[in-house]
Length: 95
Image 1 (cartoon, rainbow, N blue to C red):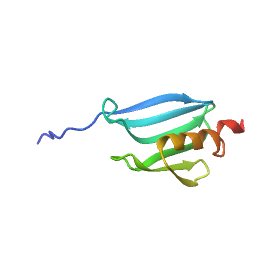
Image 2 (image 1 turned 60 degrees about the vertical axis):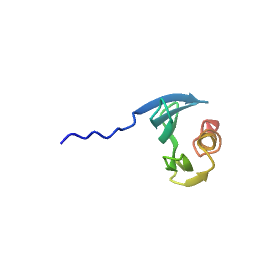
Image 3 (image 1 turned 45 degrees about the vertical axis):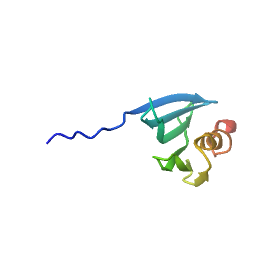
Image 4 (image 1 turned 120 degrees about the horizontal axis):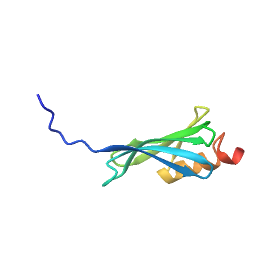
């Protein structure tokens, strides 16, 4: 049996945020651009943390998990990146 359901494309994007590397898994990048999960590391590969939306379809309920395992609710994807690049343990400002 052939599965004819339409599935959105999923891509992995890599970018630099300050002195860090951000790897993001994005669903439907050409249209809705829904972030599914992201990981931020320092340039040397040390994990700073990750973030994800609790509701990926609506892109709501964002959470950050820092390298020490602490979970932080945040208001948006942008707030997650700011938290990880500026205040999380191991963030680039600690270098």
